[in-house]
Image (cartoon, rainbow, N blue to C red; front, side, top):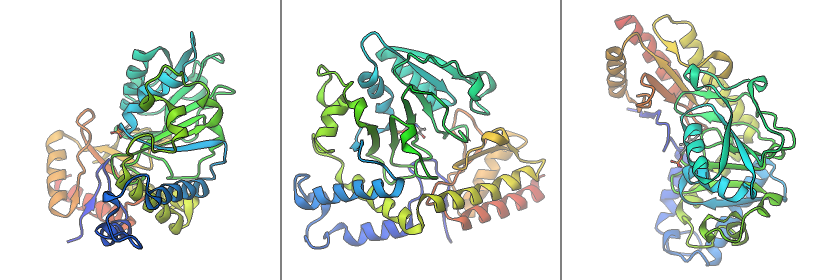
Length: 359
Ligand SMILES: *Cc1c(COP(=O)(O)O)cnc(C)c1O
């Protein structure tokens, strides 16, 4: 039986990436030992990291005035690292709160410095993201932080908020490289790898060079963007294997046709699922249609008992990890870049049959 994994992260990886990693795991081509046994100062590992970086640059059109870093501590460490590095003395930042991770980012940032809420949809249970005209952005703030896709609730920004000349800092953990990105609109982007980029253990950070000047000398080196950028992702031992998998995933995206093609496929997959939701009275989508996520599709059934039955029955059909996040309940189908269209079709068929027998 084919298993379709709807997990929100760590999530489905392309089969070809897993197979290539498996083939080369014991003996890396041209070297004879495993990548995991090699010094991060070796030419093989340095070349591997460099080529991951080059491939990201060409895939997403990242110009030379942005550094690409592979860091540890997950996306969650960036919640505090961003303010540690980017807040200027006496300065403050604006955060836009559109979901659970956005809230966590705010809470950690507020432990670091003067961080304000410039917009929030929490009073509407985060069923949409804030509209531009609801944002109360201070043109004097050091930066504005937002969360591109709200993984738990299932909403996504159709486009970045407009922050004028204030640098935009974005947590794109759950929609990075699911569509083209105009990086020049961002000062800093971070994304944990385990949703759209590969395996857990590495966080990709893209930072515009001029922002590196803000990192204070007094910061511990492992928390200092400028230090980490200078050392080219090898200030200490980097997570070599996770960077390697990330590199394979980036190559896989390019081979699929790049970010435009990813966007078309993701749009297509999400549409199939949302059409099924819209056509039914039995299933109710969680997010408002205009801000629905193409990555995490969340919905409810008439009651929690039916939801439990739904996930249990789906599991026996090979449709696994459909249970919604504990904070929201219901069902969540995460359908990132590597999730196959056939899996979406299988879920839609299952939903129709479940509704017929339980509706
Ligand atoms: C998963 C996720 C995180 C947390 O990532 P970690 O790498 O586990 O720290 C943060 N933000 C968003 C939007 C996420 O989806």
